[in-house]
Image (cartoon, rainbow, N blue to C red):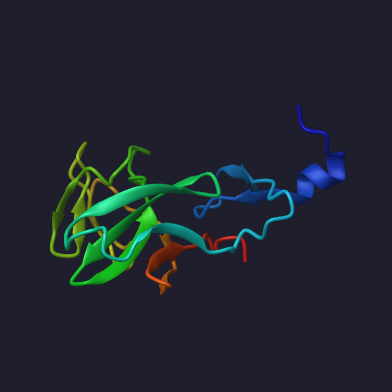
Length: 138
C-alpha cells in the first residue's frame, strides 16, 4: 500500500510515450533517477553480444557493436515481450516472437508488426566499466 497523499501520488504519475497508459514513476528513495549504473566490464562482451541488466526497475539490454556500446529497453513495443534474445543483424535486433526489427543504436522501429520505437539509454565508459543510466525522468 502506498503511503502517499493523493496530491503526492498524482505528482508521481506520468504517461507512457504514446500518452495512453499511466505509469507510476518509481520511488527513488533519495537516489537520482539519472545516476550512472555499472553494467559490465568494458572487455566482457564480444562484438555482437549483449547483456540485460536492471536499471531502476527497467530491464535494459546493452549491446556491443563495432566496439561501441548501445542500450535499449529490453521490450518489443509490439507485444511487450523481451527482445534481447532475438537475432542481431548488423545494428538491428529482430524480435524472437513476431519478427519486428529495431535499430539498436537509436531504438527506431524498422519493420512491423511494431510501430513504436524502443527507449534508448545513454552509455559511457568510466574506469573500464560500461555504465548506463535511465534519463527518461530527467
